[in-house]
Length: 290
Length: 319
Image (cartoon, rainbow over all chains, first blue to last red):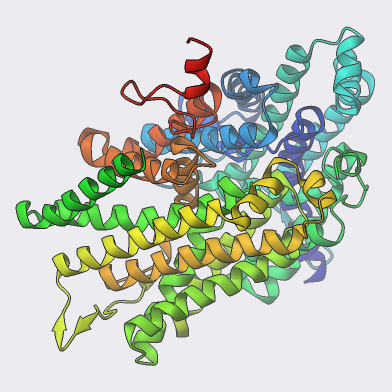
């Protein structure tokens, strides 16, 4: 039983981590909470659904396409709603983000509907036994893809040119600008990459629960944000570990009180904000600000 | 100038008194009553968000808490309605202080997300505590107020609620002009500077949440005893977002602005009936556009109408 909960928790947590990366990267560079991020994740699931219907259920084809589409969506959101507000007070940007979140979630509701849609099966389901725990091929697919994407992102942030620019911008925006880093470009890249990760997470969750619906972004968004602050917002390894941790905590908590599963994340969030607002990695961004 | 202002209010008051005598449409009355309820609700949010600058996404939860408290006190304990209303205001105020106390050390968007979490916890509890709230089935049969054995009909309720709304509006006006309002605004404009001036930040932030909670509790109680049925889905995150949009559209920091925002956003779906399901979408678009093009909202204190007299300072400069 313990092992089973751990496996389920890690799998769910890896998805939270993928979404949390978007929050943390945006917060790092632009210092505001992108409320529309959860809705980009939901759109990822919907893009996956549409692609699976029209191109057939080939996971390896759908995943990159979904990531591309959600990435473009995220970059477009940044351009429309956040870029004109680069110099505005943070609460103005936050409000704009809330407005954007309403727009994206209602657009899905209006264009696609309020039903819950099943996703076509992407791979044959086989069940494996590890000790007394069961793990099926879908779970392996979700966990494996999520970990792989995180590894790629980790490489991208730490080794690539753009990653260097992003790290510089999140340490000191003004100085980075003086060094010739274009904030417009960095913001676009951050939003593209973060949203692509969230889109992949949406697809994975859609496959795992075999359900896609227009309100799935809200709770997932809040949980992923919780994951980001557990790790310390602004910290990329923090978001990964925070996500896995939250998934495990939530799964064990859910086995005790199933009606309040979602409440666990909210309670954890408020507790972390109160007692350790810097998170596990004690993100320097938070310390600098307060 | 003062006489002209008084005249404006008298005219507005007279119109509101005459409306039910002229318009015999239940639909119009319904909208006006909901407008007054939303008006009280946004006044509360205006004090928290517009005056003190605390980004709260829990206003719908305070509203719901007022509605549930009032309904339960009247239904389960048989309290008279005016007493249940006071109970609702007290409960919302208490919870305002209760979440205020720990959460207010957070700033800006962190506060937004923590209050959002609080609102969701309220949702979870009302949806799952079946023995108290009947969960998603909601609470039916909430009594309407009555005097001398006569039940309030819609028109009587309308007069009562318009009167309460004006009391709330005048209270908010005076509050914002008082020492308290100035303190709130000083916290909003520069928290550190306010602290240096010897203002006890935590105390006044909690006070702001308490006052906002009182307004929300009042609105919730009025709503519950008007509609006579409440369920958790009237008090969701979406409703908090809508209230936020009302305050920002109308103009955070002014008292009348948010009320105008409430009027616009309540009438919007009624006037544009073809928008049916698009109303939330439109509100989202409005929020983004207002933030980009007019973050101070449509109503600001320095607004100059074509017919208003020239500002003496500008007149002196010959403009």
